[in-house]
Image (cartoon, rainbow, N blue to C red; front, side):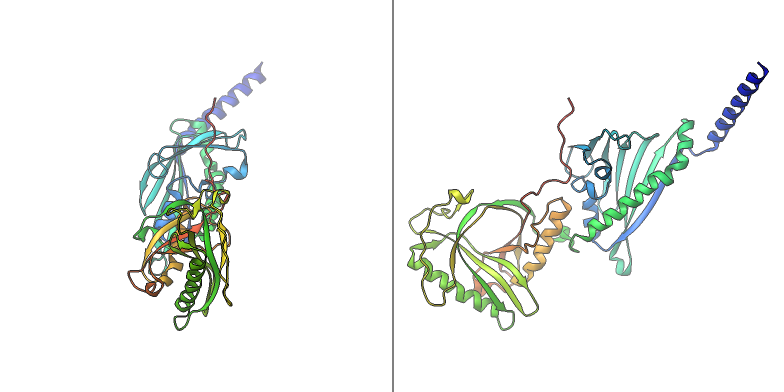
Length: 380
């Protein structure tokens, strides 16, 4: 009996000591880590101000590929919310929600996770740094409160080692994802961006390789347009939309591209050269004649593309398409691999180098493009 009492007393003394120690431990814990990127601060902010690319700065999908996500609220900014459910005990169920969003400064997420503690937040802060303030330091801070939960205060001792590793890993992954985005601040671009579905088209087309010197591109385009005009006249066709230039390759000396001109029968109504699918396009019989004429007739398939307007000289279109790519990638839209994009010319070839020349630029999106975070069915 005496031995039992000694054990009880010893246990009580240890427990009392533990309580005393816990009372002197912090009632909250935090961990902060930072990385630096050379991408524009507005692009970095947009990347994190929603959940379109959540899997590029969070590792739930790596731990459990079957984790389910449900999105609610606005697409970005305060109120955007992601709920997750997983059978993996390392993840469990919970949510992330943006509760503060200050453009170019900080984003704060409220976290509901199975780990011990309450009032959990994840804060991203952005500060310009580096030479001429062109780089951005991204700091990520996890904070959790334990209050009078004394066991939680002991658990907080391991926040730096447990949550700290996750914070560091997610920032490295985010930095790698940012490196794949063109270094362009699309938020400064004067025209809006959109995703469009383009129909299948009947077109006359020709591949051109033109020298960049001595107006070689304009001369080559003019010559090929004359061949197209001859084909239309010989086949009772008319143009049914703007001239489209599909970029294939551009070097310091030459530009390789495809000219496409939508066409329809002269007696058909306007817009008859397009349809939702190739199978629904009207059949055209086109005879190509003339020595040296390389124009062909084709039917282009429907596609989805990210797009915006450009007003200015045609050579600026290459930069515009990089701007479109940056906008699309931040939103989880995947450009078609290898496709450099295309442009509709809403100006005569002779005027394409003028400051008021107008174009519509496009970047094709991959056929399987879908949000990287898909909404899961509602729980029964």
